[in-house]
Amino acid sequence: MSCRDVRALFSEYLDGELAPAHARFLSRHVESCPDCRLHLDQLRDTLELVAGLPRESSPEPIAVRVRERLELESRRPALRELLRPARPLLRPRFAPVAVAAFCLMALPILMVPIRPTVPAPAESLLSGSESRPLALAPGVLAPRLTASAELDDALAGAPADRTWFVETVVTRDGRVSAVRVLGGDSAYAAPLAYALRQERFEPGRFQGRPVAVSLYRLISRTEVRAPQT
Amino acid sequence: MAAGEFAIASVESLGAAAAERSLLAQCRGGDAAAFARLVSLHETMVFNLALRMLGNPDEARDVSQDVFLQVYRTLGRFEERSALRTWIYRIVVNLCRNRRRLWMRRKRDRSVGLEQLSARDESQLAQARRGDSPYDAVRRREQAERVQKALLAISFDHRAVLVLREVEGLTCEEIAHSLGIAEGTVKSRLARAREALRARLCTPEAAR
Image (tube, rainbow over all chains, first blue to last red; front, side, top):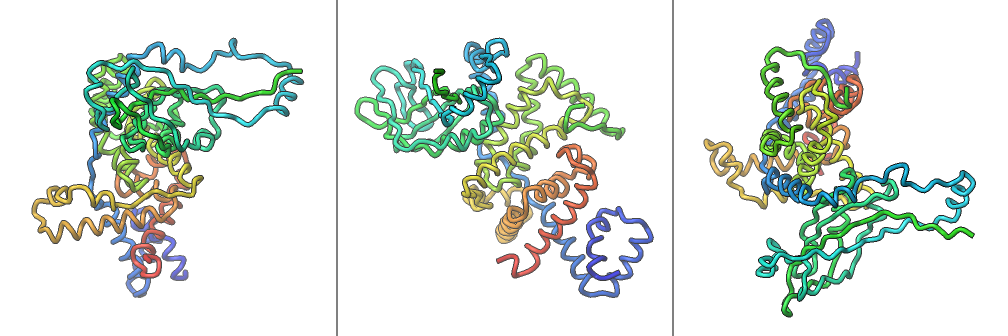
């Protein structure tokens, strides 16, 4: 058995999973081969280093943020109903020929952001910092989008007619400091949040000063089809 | 049996399994406090696994949130034939993989190793080992940064088995069930992952 063959068994050897005869052979080889001995020692040291990685704490309490998101969702039962995938009976039925024709004529998939106006609680008008952003309300000038997100890429592969409800905090300098996907298919929440963080805005304003603003948006994935002739 | 579950046979785990079943039943009954307990029981594990997989504390925090939201929404599908922990591992790895794929598609790997961790309170490490001198604490932090950087340099699949095995202490069987792959695949990936990391950490050429 060559040194290369012996080294291929090191992982199982360290786990104690080699058959006794193989393990004895390997031990004898390592005793007599300085290169393999060094290799095995390095492997042991490597595993010790990985196992010794420190246990870290999250920069923010995860439990609190999870609870906030769940509470927010539970306060919006109507929204949950809206986000529920369409029932088969409600989906349009097309004859196979018509479907094929539609596919040929289908235009590229467009991402259509919808921005419902969310009334602001009165107390939120007292702030406007990143930690206490304002909601859109009379007197609050909404942030204006200057660089949009590449949502096509983020939601590539997502089934059509899916919708996500998203909260975006736009900072006083027009960046996106936080994105929370409050509803919709969670499998796409991470890429969607990542994409939306790349957006840039002309910041929102209240009484002439730039303020951080929370935007609530429904992001829909809609296939736009050519009309039937 | 749902994906990611597997049978537990060890006697010592029976008490913990019973407690877990009770907690799960409360969660399914809509007990918010029970779910908060479930999150607090597992959040350190989830955050650390995501951190080792992604190398970025902010991303790890976001993924951790998504993990628990997915746990909450899919708790009904968990059949309790395995430890909840094993099931959660699978969700963490899948969500980290999704996030990683997005980065790769954009060709913008935003992982930054532990540089961001080093910007956090340095006393954390020193506090963790109160007997350490400041020199020891700094040395440990630098060593952790070097190991994390090497981990991020190996493939996602290799990193997943290595972290689950060496950091989380799972058996190859548990890893196989957590990741939905054959045990033999776990062992071969583990051997290659260990060797790749050894080469990164112990040979000067690879470390550059």
